[in-house]
Length: 318
Image (cartoon, rainbow, N blue to C red):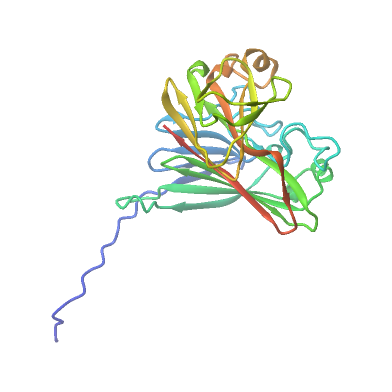
C-alpha cells in the first residue's frame, strides 16, 4: 500500500452545546423559553402577551397581581399588544366599533414555532445564544363581533426574540385582502422598577407630546432626564433613531431601541387612578412600574392590498 506523504488534517468537530428549552403548558395556554445561560420568557397565547422576562436573576416586567390570566380580560402588565387602534377608537372611522386598544390583546393567537441561532460575535460559544418564538393571528381566530367590527382580511406575525443581550418584540402586518385599511400599533410595555421616585427617562428632550392628563395640550419636553412625580400619560413624537434609557438611582436599568415606531407613550396611573382599577395590584403597585410604550399611534399606517408593515423594539436590561 502506498502511503500519501501528506494526509488531510482532521476537521475539528465543535461540541454541541445546550439549546434553549421551549415548553408549552398542558392546556396550551402558555409558551415559555429559557436559554442555557438562564434568561427566560413566558408568553400567554391570549393576546400573545409576554407576561415574564427574566435576566440576571431579575424579573424585568411588571405584572399586576390582580390581573386576569384566564383569557377573560386583557392582561394588566407584561407587554400587551395594541392593534389596530390605540385608545378609544375615533368616531366615524373604520375602527369605531372596536374596543379600546383594538382586538389583538383580547384574541387567542396561534403559536407558529421557534428558531434558534448562535451569535457570530461569540466565537467560543458552544450553544444557541437566542431563541425566536413566532405567533400568528388572522380573522378566523377572532370572534364574530370583532370580525364584524373590522371586516378586513389581514395576517399578523408577532415575533418574540430572547437573547443574552435582551428582548426583541416585532410585528409584521400584511393586508391579505382586496381593500386598503389603516392601522395603529403599540407595544404597551410595563417595566418593573424598585421605586418610581428614583426613575428617570432620557431620550425625550425637545420632543413634542400630547399631555392626556392636561386636556390633550401639546407641549415640548424640556427635561434631559424625565422624572415621574404624579400621574403621567403622554404621547411623545420621537424619531425612531433615538435610544431611550430608563435609569434607577442614576444607574441605567433599561435601554430601548425602536424600529419604525415614532411614538413613545409614558404612563403611570399614580395613586388615585391605580386605586380605581379593579385589576391593578398590589395597592402600591404604581410605585413599582413605569410604562414606556413604543408605537405608531399619532397617525395611521395605510396598507394597500398586499402591503406589509414591519415594526418592533429591542430592549436591553442592566
